[in-house]
Image (cartoon, rainbow, N blue to C red; front, side, top):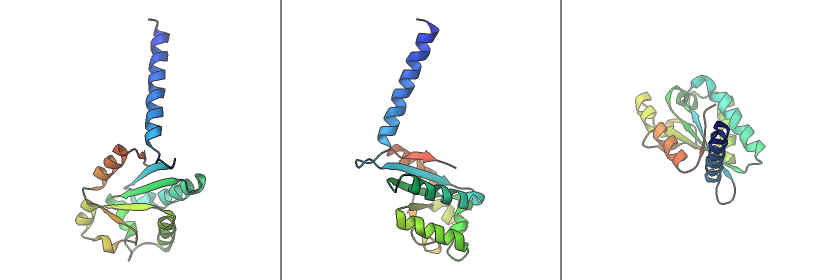
Length: 144
């Protein structure tokens, strides 16, 4: 077998795998399923902007879960969140965003789910475990 044939076979196999992963990343209604990963405090506004653009770019035909852990979670504390973050976040939750807060980070920061902006759910096993579970369920993983 020529090297070129091996390359073509490998490329065809990779394309097939990519097609399978994309097929699994949609709901029966054809909506994409996307998991955003946010842990960097300096990326909060950027990620919220990406999610807004994602909803607009798909005409809302997307299911988005935002998993927040580490230093970024502090930006969502209801008593300390900026007006811009609070407003943008509330609008995204109204559009269907499902925000998940890492239980390990909550414990480490000594805060509760009720200390966060309205809409957060608890990622009971932790943020990274939740992200792995979502990927296993066919969600595409994005970490801007």
